[in-house]
Amino acid sequence: MADDPVMRPWIGTEEAAAAAAAVSSGWVAQGPRVAEFEKAFAAAIGAGYAVAVSSCTAALHLALVAAEIGSGDEVVVPSLSFIATANAVRYVGAMPVFADVDEATQNLTTATVEPCLTGRTRAVILVDQAGVPAAFDAIQALCAPRGITVVEDAACAIGSVYQGRPVGAGAELAAFSFHPRKLLTTGEGGMLVTPDEEVAARLRRLREHGMDVSGAQRHASRQPVIERYTEVGFNYRMTDVQAAIGLVQLGKLDRLVARRRSLAQRYQTMLAGIPGLRTITDPEYGTTNYQSFWVLLPDGFPVSRNELLRRLAEVGVSARRGIMAAHLEPAYVGHSTRLPVTERLTASSVILPLFHDLTEEEQNLVVSVILSAATGSAKSFMSPVSSR
Ligand SMILES: Cc1ncc(COP(=O)(O)O)c(C=O)c1O
Image (cartoon, rainbow, N blue to C red):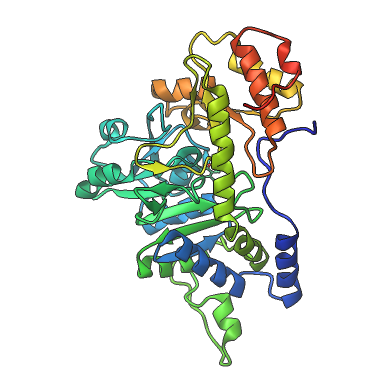
């Protein structure tokens, strides 16, 4: 079997042709294809406006700028997230306050957020971890009366559904990622969605150095246009080559989600016999896109998490440790706090390969290694099990 990565984008000749067409058009920076991608994305989510940017990290940064978060403010975030979530708070000079998460969803809940709220709390970044929708309405109900903005970090959650609507549709500001570890990719890239036209207009200026006239508008004009710089902005633009790829990818979203959900269900069925092993699953109020498929090893599992990763690597399977915990990283020394669920999840979970072209045979091999480890057998995993 060829080496089995943890993720492989479903990308090919159609995307290559779209990217080539963008190059041939002569318009390679942010232009008409970015505008088209934004419209299509907003329609797919059911959000008012979508603003494309260079990454989800950039999107989170802009979201906090747009929410007027700055020095002296506190922002509650999960430590259990890619470090970009916490870093975005630092970019605006505010202080991340780490809250613990729920073990089943790996997401913040009102019970974990509420004790972290102080008079200085100005925002909560609610992450839909691994694609599992977070309990948005409850967090919003906790925050809105206190004047606290909820920014949804939906980096992983394109195609996930919350209360019957696409994730991000109900947020004041939601940020998505198009990094290749996510369902849809543009190489690098991100998207912000908002229902507010003025906020969208400001985000468009902020991603382009604070200019009040976009480069595309200036090029399209037959009159000389003198732009103004209304505030300090950034270069967080997406290119038209990326957007061309994104448009093709967006057209594949339903098939991507369906395939991932079917492979995830197969993992769940095959691993169901291991006592105490928890796997990612849908919450009661929504469905996940299974951006990552994690398993949480129970206490007393016969092998350590790292030994399991080693055994998987030995047969060519590239699994990953579970989601990182920012408060344990050197960059966050001094922010330390006890987060027992987070610490258990980051220490004892494993992310298994899950991608569109994953075959049943490859999946069987992954499962056979875990089953062998669970029964204390060191060798039987070498022969792949048949599918059930
Ligand atoms: C929860 C979360 N937020 C933010 C990011 C950052 O996304 P990007 O790589 O597009 O900047 C990631 C990427 O892994 C993520 O998982």
